[in-house]
Length: 353
Image (cartoon, rainbow, N blue to C red):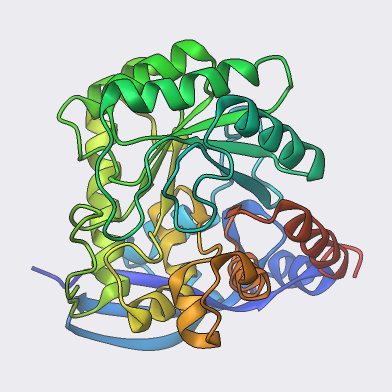
């Protein structure tokens, strides 16, 4: 049996340079967007037993290897709109934690009125998506019952109807998925990639809503207990590929799936950095990509900042690195700062430059 092949786009080009290189067949466009790649790291083998070489896009596009051509198609194919939002430009997802114990802002917006007001503020600041969550999944957190989680998130989702905002429900539970869809949610965001609840796949498929699948080994209460990987980049990729395949078997179209590598979930500092450096590999999954690195512990480990609410500069650095690699959605707490950074980034990398 031939070794599995992975492609990680690199040699990124922007603006006029990207457009010219793509027209000349010297570069491919990531997800059909404005970022092109002239090179790709070809990784062959299994996690922990792989080899790699750097190849030009031109050479890869001339390859007769079906694995190479299939991956190039997956990487370059335009992504379908998500809940009405086109993904040909980066999108901002604003975090709304309706919880008393979130690592970043626990208790600040635990009442429905406070959470709705905060969500409206994030929308005004430029959030394209509002992610409403009623259960903290920080390392060491305890599970929340269905009734309590529903009481936290449903009034907020209902209170945001009519605002024009795209609403995502951040939940692991099939019962909440069903109720949130009826309440007006447009997206399901599951940190367990629809594995926590035996009915989640069925419920998500029945809702017809797009789903965000995040990589998170184990339960939040134990996931940071000595996580070990032989090759975190390839292992996370393979797990997400398997979950995408499971979704398709359950009736969820690949075009309705977004993948999230799960920064900070069952990963140590070195794992998080390897994922952030190699994010472009995940375009080979053929789905949109989301990065949620905002205020995460690894930023504090690197910078020495213990207060999660003071990690905005590090959060923006991670987000901009992800945008450079073609990630379509960044999940952030500080929407106003992210919108300003994204505006400047877009201006610098526009097709006119």
